[in-house]
Length: 333
Image 1 (tube, rainbow, N blue to C red):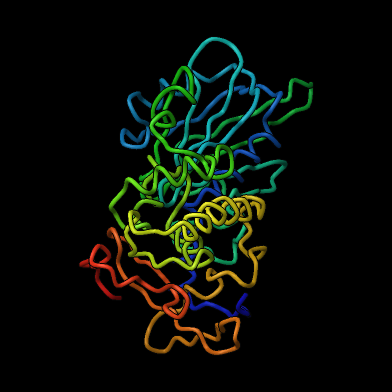
Image 2 (image 1 turned 180 degrees about the vertical axis):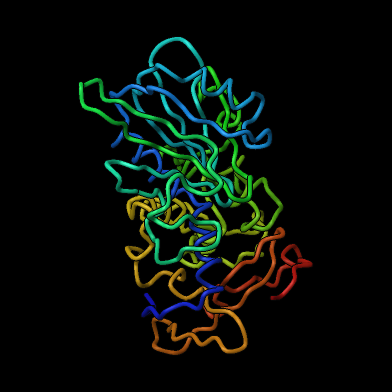
């Protein structure tokens, strides 16, 4: 695999990197883990909510507070880019989607824990660690462990761009939005045969399909690029033109890349050094990359727009077949 030594990022690259990570399945998994760590087996004593008719989907913020107050937290789980908080008793279950800038933060004994751990990449949409409540907060849960101890663990959900959604449902896995999602690469990766059959009947570019949450739930833009780089598949290649070896490589790396990302627990410093991720953020006239191919020769990172999303790829190893079906009207960046 190529050598990918890291270098410091400029502030613009860091902000884009932060936004990409915040919208990824990795942070959602970290959020569910924080709920399990700080709230499972404990009581939601009360809830502070803040009016936002866009983020609270289909009900008011006061209804949300009334629905979950006084209930015990049983578990928290993720599917795709959504996570839900399983509660005891009758009533609906919260299902949350972060969007681009949503974040879950925990204040425990005056120490703040973020679901997004890489605080060295703070942007204007991120609250400083010593600020509470966080900016753009939508709700704060006050968690009591049932003992006689004074005080609560506070869990806040914030969203600067208001692209996240808070929903209440009766059965999270059997109702929208989760019921409308495709397979989760970590939780429910299909067999190679089913994966192959699903790909072969599509005519869209493979990058567009990987980003379609109705196909693969949880794969975001940078993970899709990483999957394609590791599989040595060009992002513009049409699904119906993929050969058997490419399908096998994609099947392996869809699962493997997402598994590695989730196991890193939202800490991108733990990502492998051979990943494209380590270099994809350096754009612009003055940007320099030291990425190398396995042969030791310099690698080139190029950017194109596929399906409306910027795509990073390495043309030396990701070649677009010359078949007529792969001619696209994509835009070079």
